[in-house]
Image (tube, rainbow, N blue to C red; front, side, top):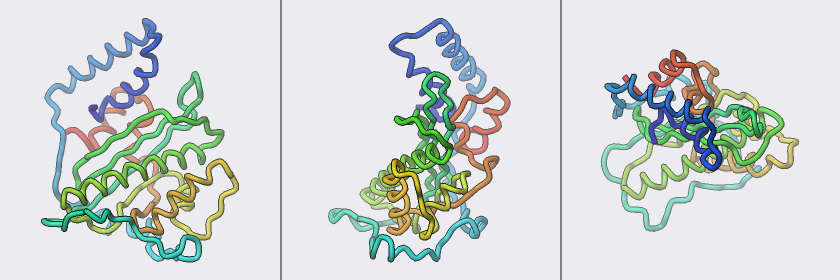
Length: 242
């Protein structure tokens, strides 16, 4: 669906079985918004972001993962064709709105993936589990982002598109970023162990690098919560419409 209304549509879809009048009013607000931005254009910029140069200090490129996961490498299909053409870089942002659902207190995940400077995948969905802390919701969101990154990298390879290094993923929770980028980091919450080791092993395999960014610079923020009209327009214009 459309990236600028995907959060609202995701929230409204959870009330399809038993809608109320208030839900209809919110759907009409969505249509009013679509009418307001009728002439906006989606930006698909093929230029490189070169974001690694600007935020080189945000990524731990010298982490030694061998002691923890051995000599693991990214799995490349045996039937993958030979890459051809100009290589592309992949970049992403991930965020979570902890306990954002007032009825169930489930968190909401938002993921945004780019090929070069073009937004390709935007994901906004309520999490399947209820997390008691922000760390848990952000870790679950990062695990979801990993699945999307793997799918994207697989599809690009099968279409003969060369990739430039690992995917660069930004998040605004320092504890989660440290868990995914520092080999010596420990976790005490057993129920998050699968997500924890999945995102770390992906770093060891060279699938991605996870780095920290300020909340104000996390452009996936608009995919996790409902924002006011002015704020939403400002957030969406950072990556989607002009």
